[in-house]
Amino acid sequence: MISVDRPTGRIRATLLFWLCLLAAIAWAAWIAPLRAATRVDILNASYGLAWMVLLAMLLCGFVVAEGMLRRRRKYVLLRTAPARLMEPDQAWRGFDTSCGAAGFCLILLACWQFVAPTHFATGGFRLQPLVVAVTCLPAAAAMFTLSHRRWRPGLADVAMGLLTCGVAGVALLFLPSRPRELAERFPLILNAIVIALGVLVLFWVWIHGVWEQQLDSGAAWTTAGRLRGLAGRFAFTTALMALAAAWLMTVWPRLPQVAGRDAEIGRMTAGIAGHLLLILGAMLSRRRWKRSAFAVIAALAVLSLVGFVVVRVSDFVTLTR
Image (cartoon, rainbow, N blue to C red; front, side):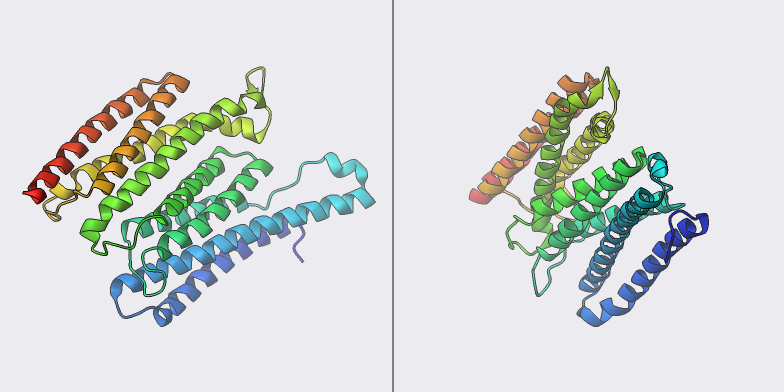
């Protein structure tokens, strides 16, 4: 049994985490070709989905196991040495850094699934975002739990990134199954991502206001108070990602490799709504944090909205002639 009170036990716990991670990667690399069809895109997507599930299970499992061992240690000390209950718990050596690296890899795998949408025989286009949501959201909860146990801004950043990917995955679940051609489907994907990220910008603005009570004379004294200090930085990052997706959605029909049309009324309405949500989030962020960078994002979002309307109206007029 691994003892968290011994230095060797704390090292072995982290080594066990990496051994399980390498075994999971090897197993996924072996089993994915057996489960996938002969199409290369389905094969690659299957690799990524299998790795995401195993990585999230390991991350959540080890965080839960560490919590159980911490509670067991306190129970034993309560019975044997109550005076030692006030001593800080010793973290598994290298465990927080390892979990941060694993969480970052999970973010990269989620982004891979977003940029390479694949239609499966079972689940269609919804299988990928479903797996992203059910893996990233619990992993984000695990990273937030680690941040609560031992505050590290890097772990909180990874947790926020996982939460962002999970929310984007949920948004993609509401997309229709048609069209199946990626040249026509990508504007829908980008639109859903813009809306999800715009909602998250508003969420971080709300969090920053609500969690002001977690400050004591301006100093954070709880994990929520510390997360409040990161909300502005992550709202800015999220707004930038939403702006990039909005601009790509705007110019998508005019890309040389696409050369298509995107002029349906429903898509136009959703695209305008996504832009307006981003503009609202940027302006509220500008008001909250007094940073001119948010005003620049709002101005660029307005330009993207104008370009979006011009391109779609032009396509609509062309198609109705």
